[in-house]
Length: 209
Ligand SMILES: O=C(O)CCC(=O)C(=O)O
Ligand SMILES: [Fe+2]
Image 1: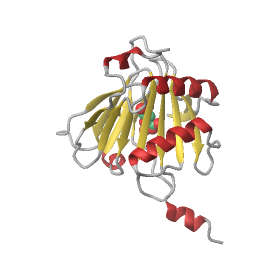
Image 2: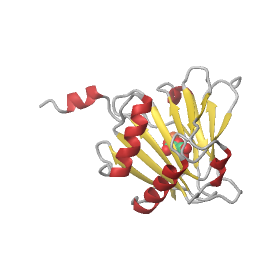
Image 3: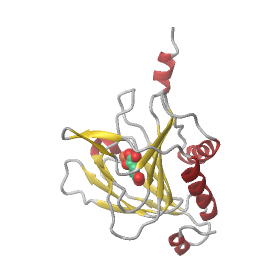
Image 4: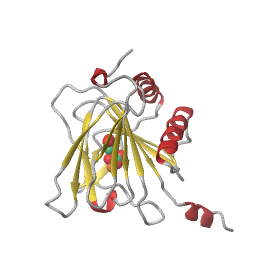
């Protein structure tokens, strides 16, 4: 079963690699990091088995629902890791040569779902780390802009089914990102951002009496 036909454009099994060579930050993309049938499998399993919730947050004195569904796993207060998430995490970690202790799942149900311009939250140890972002499902645009430099062109990266995007540790210091709404007919998309929420040092300190 091929849920998301756009990846049929690529040769089966071939990873297409792009290094965006951003000033001051690492941003790298592997398309078809997960073969199509594996990506179809994970999309379905994560869509059906994740306890999705719609968070609300305060904006201009009003509580507004996020235009997407989310779930946190791992870290101090996330849900317990599940077998499929541990499988995906192990593959991403082996590729990125780093280990993650939390993952945020976003489910964009259709083109009305989005995430506004932001850079990712500063982890508990007060510095940014590598973030690995995996996409299953419909392709959505991932926009990137420099926080201060107008001479650095904005990027629009289509994140395809089974892709892996690696954001280096300085990415959140210098850049913001955004997934805009789209008027095009769009199926669901699940994004996983694997994060390092606390450095080993923080854990070591926490385990001290
Ligand atoms: O869906 C995406 O590709 C990005 C999600 C994101 O920026 C986030 O969860 O912080
Ligand atoms: Fe983000």
